[in-house]
Image 1 (cartoon, protein in one colour):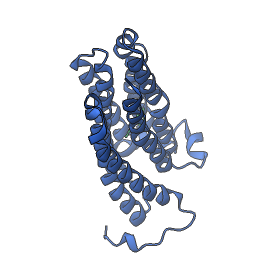
Image 2 (spheres, rainbow, N blue to C red):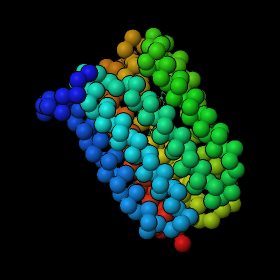
Image 3 (spheres, protein in one colour):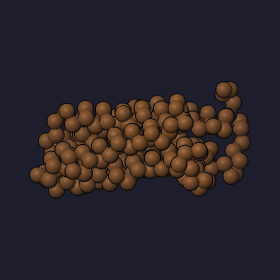
Image 4 (cartoon, rainbow, N blue to C red):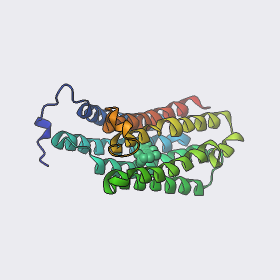
Length: 238
Ligand SMILES: *C/C=C(C)/C=C/C=C(C)/C=C/C1=C(C)CCCC1(C)C
């Protein structure tokens, strides 16, 4: 791949490239915002805001490459995408843990979440890039790991701990649950669209949607959106 893609024009109907560009800028801007706001954040929320900034920063660097790769080749940057997720999703688990820690969570909750998220991503990568013919079965494994995370947050440890805690922590856990159940569910939709060709769920591919646009929307919601929710919680609680 050459490094001249910045000289390539983007066709006005190339929405994929458009979302890679705006995604790059949004991730960069969000990182600056979180980093600069650190110094006027209450100490007990600082680590959370810092981790939000790290997540958007790591994504900004990957988006920079994905944008280039996509514009130069017209293909999906599957590899960079998964490298980004392998780094940022465990960091999101750290965010979840930091919130639940305020309700008394132990470190083993963090390891459970990280482990499940890695299973979810590795099996997803196999289905999307390595064993494409059996994308359905890999997607199913990935989905099971995802449901385990949903279970932990909705009914498992996270939910139980939150019940006995302060209203502020309950509110934080409530928004965490929304992100895991609604925000994260954007990704399997992208997967079904992107891998549907020749599978029983080929109707998803036939919709004419684009996997990268769906993933890019998912990233904006979950990385920037979740970071902003943490930010506002850090201001409202007293
Ligand atoms: C910042 C990036 C985030 C929060 C990425 C999250 C990714 C997922 C929740 C992916 C989930 C998948 C499934 C549940 C099944 C199909 C394969 C995946 C990996 C797309």
